[in-house]
Length: 153
Image (cartoon, rainbow, N blue to C red; front, side):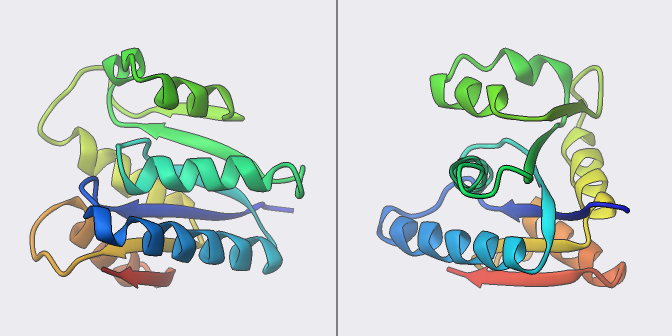
């Protein structure tokens, strides 16, 4: 049986006064996904939303050992990120998928398309911007008919 998959998209720069709200909403969205039978969670591992999501999924694994966290990395050298939190979260992944060998202007779009295509559900942290990866991902998920949970900030 195919694992039900859920991914996240969202902004890197979450305002400090919205951070607790975003964390609480992501925690609720991940919990709801788990209770609905989702077991595979994919993060793009960018700062902000992606790493918060990865952390929440990692915490949930203590109570739900059948869930897995996957990293979708846009280009290979991003794995050399020296941030200790990034490295801690990567170590918690069941799989790491590198989508492009080298950086290009399209690396992030390739990653986002992969995550959306692989997922049945997309959780989005969105502040209304009309340009960028988050709005692209929301529109792509909508076009593909994916279940979409938008956390507005």
